[in-house]
Length: 200
Image 1 (cartoon, rainbow, N blue to C red):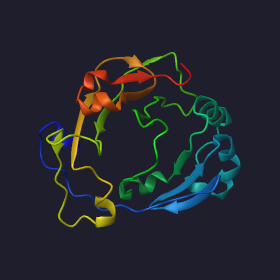
Image 2 (cartoon, one colour):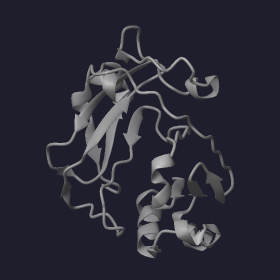
Image 3 (cartoon, one colour):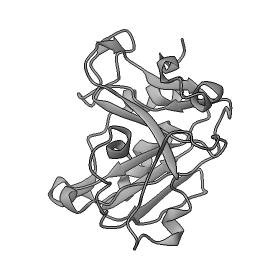
Image 4 (cartoon, one colour):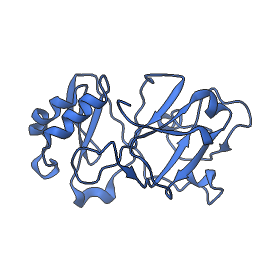
């Protein structure tokens, strides 16, 4: 998708995708190389980490889980635990969920590489491609995406026919998530993408 947005080479063929799903308040399950902890309350993750194999278990930081519970109340958190020795075999993750606000798309992008609590007052230099699509886009909107002929129908039905996007990698920006109003997306006015800080 990024390649068609920047008018480069066609999208490379993926090695495939594994499927996952969960419905409980806290569920621990294996998916591809990951052991996934899916929790509606992030503060429940530390206890659930006992079910993750020790070689995949991240260091425990209760303050981080409390931060996410406070900053994103009502959100489900997916913690994907893995062994770095298996990282090259990882398949992409696709998560499908109903939006909290259908009139505004918010893309998670909090920046913190220490394992600690993100500093919401800091400026960061993101290294992101923000790629967007909409089922409500008018004809001719965005750039057409061609997928490999052998892609499974089960996966293809979740992928967009057309995308638009922009790279954020040069400027310092407030730490936070990316957001755009759905109407601005339909107009392809990507200048309206903003950074939003949880709780502000």
